[in-house]
Each structure stands twice: as structure tokens, then as C-alpha cells.
Image (cartoon, rainbow, N blue to C red):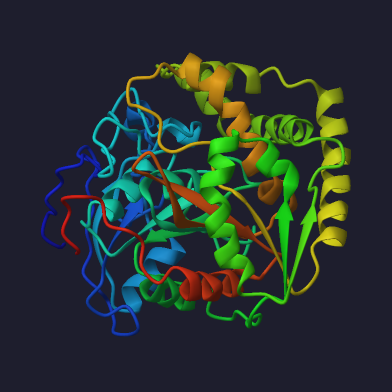
Length: 405
């Protein structure tokens, strides 16, 4: 086991710590990383951001596949990071374990559900960190904390020994400040990537930009120009012919049904104490109507077909990652739900529904806080996104008063 890491931002799990020395040498030599509390680490218990889950599950028998790969490539695991409860939130505020601090503003949320991983990278405690993304759980904290963050193509990175949340959407992703480090991690986790090279056309998702306030769209305009300068052609498109809010509703139904399939038996038998927001969403998941589920599955197939047609082999789509910078800590889940969650999920759901890779880039600021711009492409174009990120954003900005790692 490795030494404990200092944790001034409350990013790491205290009830179930874990640390491992490298097992080999490679492209990640000398780098330190952290892993979200959903990745199994042999001999330790994985907590899922929920104390009763931690208490009712035995230690893992094996490491998650990606943990094994990273250790073999020379990286050191320094700790397990806090997740939102059962991953069923985007806020980064766990009612049982607290809210990891955002170094851009200690009065601001770090975003969830991969909150601790993002907070640890933002604070310079590690070089990179693993997260997972179902509905936006890497992309949202990337935007809030001013980091590079990737939701990989669905199924692209193997998920053995990863806790199941919503299998139809769950993806492994990671955070870093340095684009070179980000790409080195990509070469380990995406070792057989074939697609590479510059994109020829930038597609600006007009309906996504219309879904945010005008001042947010204005703040992102220079970042759009930066991306557009990397391609030969620019075109404005609309992702959703029937509206992004309609797409989110389809995502919500499908995700909830999958979540209940994965966790319903445990919730029913254990009757855990769930925090606000998570409690209500889990109750809704238990009541998904079979007819609505059938319709949602048909609609998802239509969405996949539309995006497959809309996004060409050499296209990259540009859209806001989140509707605003990091919200203040202490906002109630009800206020976040009514004023923000639906708006955010309307932006985030496209990649999940179609299984596409999407990467958030820290290319904009608003009121002194980072604001992410997302790039999205066809399935298995993950490394092309990472290469583009390296050209336009070699280093993420450092929060005021925080020294480089």
C-alpha cells in the first residue's frame, strides 16, 4: 500500500481507503492517480457513495480491469474518491459524506457523480483520476472544475469489477489538467484505438446553444472559434428534430428502468437511508411504466439513427457541456432539480442515448469560474477527440492560489 495523500478538499473516502504501488513500468511512470468509489480494488470494499452499501457488501476479489492496466503502465493509485450517492446525482454533494471542495471556489460545487475525482485533480493532489459517466458524471465535474474530461464510447473501455448503475449508459472516463497526460492515459485504456487524425468539419449544435442563457453562449463563442479553426468547414445543425427536452425524457425513463433493474432488489431488501434527490429519483425508478419504457426504447433507436446520419466520419459536434458554471454549495436539491437538472440533462443526454464519446474542454470562463465546451463525435472516435484537445487546450487553467502539481 502507498502512503496516504493529504486531502485539503475532502475528495477522498475515509471509510474505505485504498492505495496501490505500480506493478510495472510504462507511459505512466511517476504519475499518481485516484479512482472513484465504484471501481473494485482487491481486498477492499467498494462503497458506491452509500454507507449501507459499504456495510452490506464484501471486499472485492479482483481489481477493476482499468485499475490493473494503469498500475501495469507505471501509475500509482493514491486513493479512492467520493462519489455522489449510488451515482444518482450531478451535484457533487453527498448527504452522507459531504461535498468535495472545488478549488475554483470553496463556496462552489465540484459536480457529480465523479465529484471526488474531479476535486482531487483540480486541487493538484493527483495527475489524473478515474470517473464514470452515465448521464454526465464526468462531463459535469470537468466543466465545473475546469478540467479535461472524457466520456468514452459506450462499451469502449471494459467494465469488469465496476459497480453497475445503468448498464445501457455506464462508461468509464477520466480527468486531467495536462493534455499530454490525458493522452497517455488514453493509450493505456484505449490501446487498440484505430481512428486518428484531424476532423474536417465542425458541426455547431444550435439547439444545444439555444438551451442555455445568452450570456453563457456568448462566453463560449471564442472557444467555438478555437475549435472551428482546426477544421476546413463549419456547419450549424440541430441535434434533436423533436426537441432536446424530449430526448432527455427518453433518457430519464431508460436510465431509471436500468437503475432499478440493477439496484432495486438491494434497495427493497436493505431499505437504505437515501439523501434528498436520490431518494425521489429511486422512487420514480421503481414506478417506470412498461408502456412508457417500450416507447422510450423505440425513440432511442430513432435517435441513434438520426445521429448516425447527422454526424459524418470526419465531423466533430460542438455544444455546451453545462448550462452554467459551478452552482453555489448549499443549494437545495429541489432548486437544482427544478431550475437546473433538466436543463443540464437536455445538453448531456445525446451522447448517452447514442453511445457517443464526448469530451469537455476548459476553454471558457464566466464570472471567474470555468465553463466547459464539449466536443462529440462518432462511436470509437475517442482518440481523435483527445488529439483535438491536445491541439487547442494543452493545459487547463490553474485555480488562483493553487500551485501546479
